[in-house]
Image (cartoon, rainbow, N blue to C red):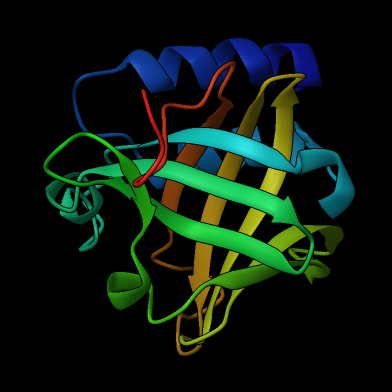
Length: 166
């Protein structure tokens, strides 16, 4: 699969309402380009692929919005909405925040978010100029998974953060 086919397949899988075989997502991942940490700074709105992973649906329950990468050393993995609809970094759920590094995963070096309080890594690859595909990996997860698959879409205009005016 070339990168153009991977982008088209990514979109098809993103729009699918039923369960997705992780092997289909792995095929897309393999064809995508790696990305550097400094190239993904900014605000991102997130979503998940339905693969039957145990984490599926948990972020939605926390009103997860996405991720914010203010700098390589200031990453907020769990930007959620409070009851007023404002964004905040959910430090409790994430057990802290995170940082961005270049880490090898499946034989390629790519931007990876390393959580401060958990042995968890979110690996990223570029789908296009405004979209990233992510695979969550963690200590103790075998090489074959199961992995949690998600995507991030660059936010054109981030909603107000908690404490800021609308």
